[in-house]
Image (cartoon, rainbow, N blue to C red; front, side, top):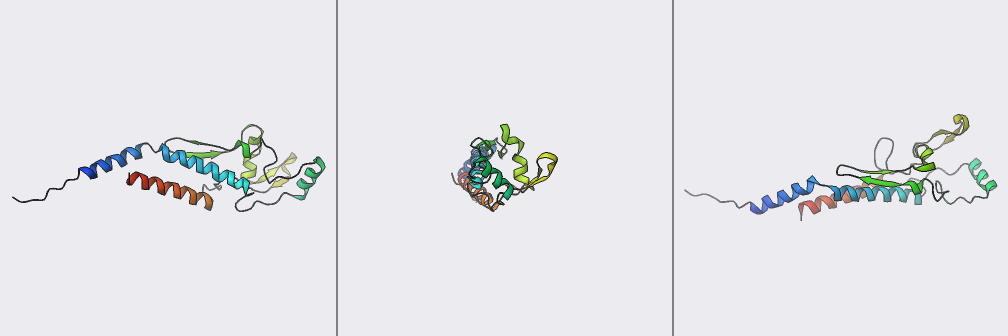
Length: 160
C-alpha cells in the first residue's frame, strides 16, 4: 500500500502558539489604551481634529477682564479637563476617559455640546476631545492608529 505522510508538527505548534496568544490579548489592549490616550491628547494639542469652534466673544471678554490669556481651547487650567484624561484596559477592552474632580462637571458638555449656565441659557458647542463620537465611531486619525496597532498585533501573532 502506498501513501503520503504529511508531517504537520510545525503547523500544529504554530496554531497552538497563535491560540495561546489569542487567549490573553493584554498586549494588544494595553497598546490600544495608550493609543486612545495619545489621540485624545493630540486633540487637545491641535485644538480639535477637526478644529473646534472658537471661544465666544463673551468668553473672551470675561477672560480679558480677569486677566486670563487664552492658552488654547479647553486648556485654561493645568488641573482641568486635559489633565483628567486617563486610560484603562483589561483582556477584552481598552478605554479612554476624562473628568475627575472639578473637570467631571463639564467633561460631557464639552464632548457633546449642550446648554449650560444658570437656567441653561448658554449654548456650549461640542468640542469633541475624546477620539470617539456620540455613535461610538473613532475619528479618522484614531481609526488609522488603532488599525495599525491591530495589524501589527495580528502580524506578530501569526509570524512569531
